[in-house]
Length: 319
Ligand code: 5GP
Ligand code: MN
Image 1: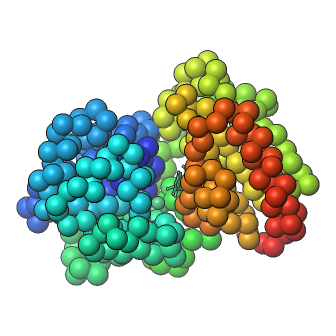
Image 2: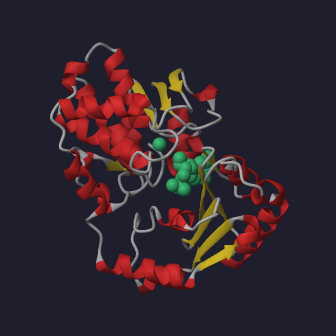
């Protein structure tokens, strides 16, 4: 899975893990970095290796693997320090992913489909089309549901196709308790995080109405003051989109070694291209990310310049 895995990266990977182990395969899930604690409830999460913490063991497993499934990313750079180990590994690499512009030359097999809501949906399709749907147990159902639900913004993004609802119907028919998963993901945060969000919305959000855009810029001191951990800032970027007329929302967080950016849009503004062009990133049409080595102030200035350059597209609505 990609670094700093989200619900879909962790859910799709663990879903596939719970499927493959039923055939007697020896399977290990490796994350390039640590992950948000709100994912720890997922069945099997405790067995996941953190490459940065368990580098020697992870490298030995990668080196000796017959098959390496690469889920929810499509360029090796998204695996951070794991990149070289993966590129040098002799096992066949299989891509399952829904992002744009896959690095096709590094995978031997695979499925890349940007029309899919989530990688978790693609793992579900993979299991069903293998004719082994009866192997979907509660562990698989929970992991895949979490992946689909988080990547579709709780079934509201345009990617929520009828096949997504069919998938959910099927998982419910197999006995999935969906409410437990929503609570595990969204009702398990600290008081600090909620107070941090209050501060962010009050003091760190800037509006650019002439561009239908908003930017949240979070300095390092806020992360320290509120004891903010990996994952606590997930979803914050969406808040400005709830303001009438706002079409582009961005967040930049000073993570110390780099400034991490996220972009979300509604309608016809392509944040994948925007993130690629200005912030060394990429992703999907309406959800993308990037990073910068510049200072927080530098990134804010760059964002202002970038929206001015895209004024024609941003100032006219096409929902
Ligand atoms: P997020 O803003 O939640 O980090 O990411 C939104 C989407 O963009 C996700 O699908 C994620 O995989 C992708 N993404 C985030 N950061 C990067 C990046 O630096 N490069 C690329 N290519 N994709 C990114
Ligand atoms: Mn995904």
